[in-house]
Image (cartoon, rainbow, N blue to C red; front, top):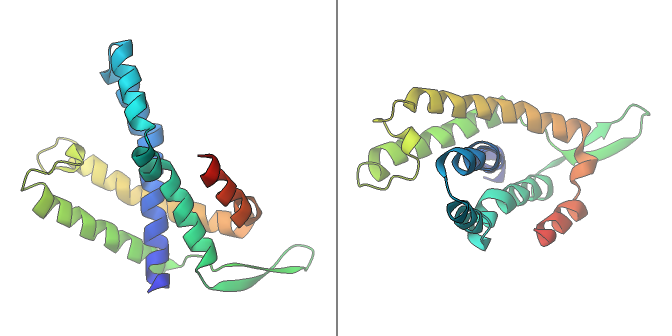
Length: 171
């Protein structure tokens, strides 16, 4: 079960972190809020404990989950020294991530949206951007699949347990 959920957990946290912090937050702050008071309230809302947990720390937890609870494999480096690192994601993991995302999307569209719970207005079937946003999500899944495999393969030393724990405590 852990192997099946490893990539979907990491990719959903990565998408949430990226879209909120680098797309939606700047868009709302710079284009939708006119007064300094509204901007200050929005920043206060954005940096409260719950929002930081959802949009920042969640990706740290997902990385820790991927590194600590997964199967390890031996890796050979350029100088023939072997080391242990998490297994790379394979195409099955990519499909698990896409299936979980599609399942959540169907749940949102068919149940939550219909009863008036509008968490993501751009994913609503009534939105003019529904096709663009859904395609963007699936492109992000593929992009994060390659990104996280590259990180595991090449730069895992930057994401060690101690540095992630320290980052989480700092945040």
